[in-house]
Length: 152
Image 1 (tube, rainbow, N blue to C red):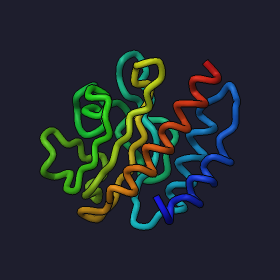
Image 2: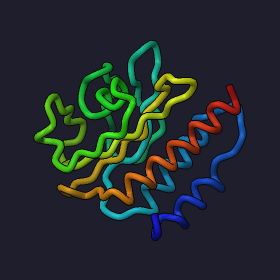
Image 3: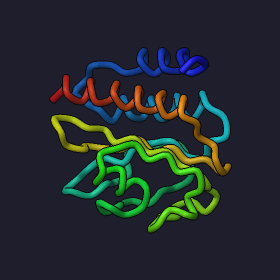
Image 4: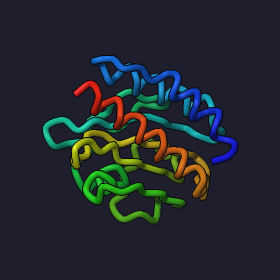
Protein backbone atom coordinates (compact mmCIF):
# COMPACT_ATOMS: atom_id res chain seq x y z
CA UNK A 1 0.00 0.00 0.00
CA UNK A 2 2.91 2.34 0.61
CA UNK A 3 1.59 5.88 0.53
CA UNK A 4 -1.77 4.79 1.92
CA UNK A 5 -0.34 3.34 5.15
CA UNK A 6 -0.73 6.69 6.92
CA UNK A 7 -4.32 7.10 5.72
CA UNK A 8 -5.10 3.54 6.84
CA UNK A 9 -3.68 4.37 10.28
CA UNK A 10 -5.88 7.47 10.37
CA UNK A 11 -8.97 5.43 9.48
CA UNK A 12 -8.02 2.86 12.12
CA UNK A 13 -7.74 5.61 14.75
CA UNK A 14 -11.16 6.99 13.80
CA UNK A 15 -12.93 3.63 14.07
CA UNK A 16 -14.18 3.02 17.59
CA UNK A 17 -16.02 0.16 19.20
CA UNK A 18 -19.41 1.68 19.53
CA UNK A 19 -22.92 0.39 19.14
CA UNK A 20 -23.54 2.83 16.26
CA UNK A 21 -21.72 1.74 13.08
CA UNK A 22 -22.94 4.87 11.26
CA UNK A 23 -20.44 7.06 13.16
CA UNK A 24 -17.57 4.85 12.01
CA UNK A 25 -18.80 4.88 8.44
CA UNK A 26 -19.20 8.68 8.43
CA UNK A 27 -15.68 9.30 9.73
CA UNK A 28 -14.23 6.70 7.35
CA UNK A 29 -15.92 8.27 4.31
CA UNK A 30 -14.69 11.71 5.37
CA UNK A 31 -11.10 10.52 5.90
CA UNK A 32 -11.01 8.85 2.49
CA UNK A 33 -12.50 11.84 0.69
CA UNK A 34 -10.14 14.25 2.42
CA UNK A 35 -7.06 12.02 2.19
CA UNK A 36 -7.17 11.06 -1.49
CA UNK A 37 -7.01 13.07 -4.69
CA UNK A 38 -9.44 13.11 -7.58
CA UNK A 39 -12.56 11.76 -5.87
CA UNK A 40 -16.06 13.12 -6.22
CA UNK A 41 -17.91 10.68 -3.92
CA UNK A 42 -16.92 8.46 -1.01
CA UNK A 43 -19.35 6.62 1.19
CA UNK A 44 -21.40 3.61 2.08
CA UNK A 45 -24.60 1.93 1.04
CA UNK A 46 -26.12 -0.22 3.79
CA UNK A 47 -28.26 -3.31 3.18
CA UNK A 48 -31.76 -2.66 4.44
CA UNK A 49 -34.56 -5.12 3.71
CA UNK A 50 -32.40 -6.73 1.02
CA UNK A 51 -31.70 -3.48 -0.86
CA UNK A 52 -28.69 -1.17 -0.68
CA UNK A 53 -29.74 2.13 0.86
CA UNK A 54 -27.53 5.21 0.92
CA UNK A 55 -25.63 5.65 4.16
CA UNK A 56 -22.95 8.09 5.30
CA UNK A 57 -21.14 9.76 2.39
CA UNK A 58 -19.30 12.83 1.16
CA UNK A 59 -20.20 14.19 -2.29
CA UNK A 60 -23.22 15.20 -4.32
CA UNK A 61 -26.63 13.72 -3.47
CA UNK A 62 -26.76 10.03 -4.30
CA UNK A 63 -29.17 7.37 -5.45
CA UNK A 64 -31.23 6.42 -2.41
CA UNK A 65 -31.78 2.73 -3.14
CA UNK A 66 -29.97 0.21 -5.33
CA UNK A 67 -31.32 -3.28 -5.98
CA UNK A 68 -29.06 -6.32 -5.79
CA UNK A 69 -27.36 -6.79 -9.17
CA UNK A 70 -28.01 -3.22 -10.33
CA UNK A 71 -25.00 -1.06 -11.20
CA UNK A 72 -21.53 -1.50 -9.77
CA UNK A 73 -22.71 -1.44 -6.13
CA UNK A 74 -25.48 -3.98 -6.64
CA UNK A 75 -23.13 -6.24 -8.62
CA UNK A 76 -20.49 -6.11 -5.85
CA UNK A 77 -23.24 -7.01 -3.40
CA UNK A 78 -24.36 -10.07 -5.38
CA UNK A 79 -20.87 -11.28 -6.33
CA UNK A 80 -19.44 -10.52 -2.86
CA UNK A 81 -16.28 -9.18 -4.46
CA UNK A 82 -14.57 -5.87 -5.08
CA UNK A 83 -15.43 -4.21 -8.36
CA UNK A 84 -12.82 -1.85 -9.85
CA UNK A 85 -14.29 -0.18 -12.92
CA UNK A 86 -12.02 2.04 -15.00
CA UNK A 87 -14.83 3.42 -17.17
CA UNK A 88 -18.29 3.18 -15.61
CA UNK A 89 -19.93 4.10 -18.92
CA UNK A 90 -18.88 0.71 -20.33
CA UNK A 91 -20.23 -1.22 -17.32
CA UNK A 92 -23.52 -2.97 -18.22
CA UNK A 93 -26.34 -1.53 -16.14
CA UNK A 94 -24.29 1.32 -14.69
CA UNK A 95 -26.41 3.66 -12.57
CA UNK A 96 -25.44 7.30 -13.13
CA UNK A 97 -26.20 8.92 -9.77
CA UNK A 98 -23.65 11.61 -10.66
CA UNK A 99 -22.98 12.17 -14.37
CA UNK A 100 -19.49 13.46 -13.51
CA UNK A 101 -18.34 10.04 -12.24
CA UNK A 102 -16.18 8.13 -14.71
CA UNK A 103 -14.48 5.43 -12.62
CA UNK A 104 -15.55 3.61 -9.48
CA UNK A 105 -14.41 1.07 -6.93
CA UNK A 106 -16.85 -0.79 -4.68
CA UNK A 107 -15.86 -3.05 -1.78
CA UNK A 108 -18.49 -5.29 -0.17
CA UNK A 109 -18.62 -5.28 3.63
CA UNK A 110 -19.24 -8.90 4.62
CA UNK A 111 -20.20 -10.02 8.11
CA UNK A 112 -20.90 -13.69 8.88
CA UNK A 113 -20.95 -14.49 5.16
CA UNK A 114 -23.52 -11.84 4.26
CA UNK A 115 -23.02 -8.46 2.60
CA UNK A 116 -24.21 -5.84 5.09
CA UNK A 117 -22.97 -2.77 3.20
CA UNK A 118 -20.66 -1.61 0.42
CA UNK A 119 -17.93 1.01 0.41
CA UNK A 120 -18.33 3.03 -2.80
CA UNK A 121 -15.71 5.44 -4.14
CA UNK A 122 -16.19 7.46 -7.35
CA UNK A 123 -13.89 9.65 -9.41
CA UNK A 124 -14.51 12.07 -12.26
CA UNK A 125 -11.39 10.64 -13.98
CA UNK A 126 -11.20 7.54 -16.14
CA UNK A 127 -8.80 4.84 -14.90
CA UNK A 128 -8.48 6.59 -11.53
CA UNK A 129 -8.04 3.53 -9.30
CA UNK A 130 -4.99 1.25 -9.15
CA UNK A 131 -4.31 -2.17 -7.64
CA UNK A 132 -2.56 -0.70 -4.57
CA UNK A 133 -5.59 1.50 -3.95
CA UNK A 134 -7.86 -1.53 -4.24
CA UNK A 135 -5.82 -3.17 -1.48
CA UNK A 136 -6.18 -0.02 0.62
CA UNK A 137 -9.96 0.12 0.18
CA UNK A 138 -10.26 -3.60 0.93
CA UNK A 139 -8.25 -3.04 4.14
CA UNK A 140 -10.64 -0.27 5.10
CA UNK A 141 -13.53 -2.62 4.40
CA UNK A 142 -12.03 -5.29 6.68
CA UNK A 143 -11.75 -2.71 9.48
CA UNK A 144 -15.44 -1.81 9.14
CA UNK A 145 -16.34 -5.52 9.04
CA UNK A 146 -14.39 -6.14 12.26
CA UNK A 147 -16.10 -3.38 14.23
CA UNK A 148 -19.51 -4.41 12.77
CA UNK A 149 -18.91 -7.97 14.01
CA UNK A 150 -17.73 -6.74 17.41
CA UNK A 151 -20.84 -4.64 18.03
CA UNK A 152 -23.11 -7.39 16.73
